[in-house]
Amino acid sequence: MSAVEIRTEIDNLLDKVQDQDESFLKVVYSMLSTYVQEQKDPILGYETDGTPVTASAFLAQADEAMAAVERGEYITLEQLEKESEEWLKPTK
Image 1 (cartoon, rainbow, N blue to C red):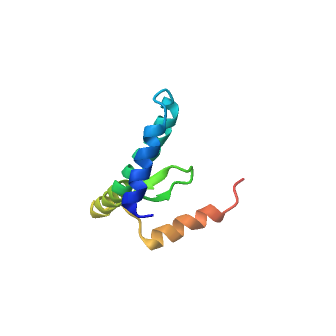
Image 2: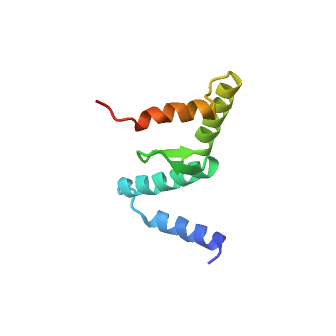
Image 3: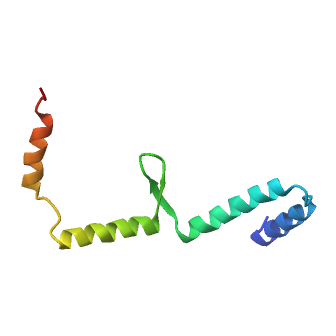
């Protein structure tokens, strides 16, 4: 089935859905709306809590990270190594 045929069939099927069945139409609308939004701003990955990371959010985070580096807000590898040595020391 071609894309045009599929669109036509979807239109025909939606026409058969009773107007009273608003909950079904809301589900279809939500699915289509989510799909279209993801095409505009695709999901690149997920945070550890399951929150999606979109391309626009990722680019904003990358821009902020670059700006922080330009402001001198970073630590050197040597500083990180020294700091990480503290992580392995037992606490009393």
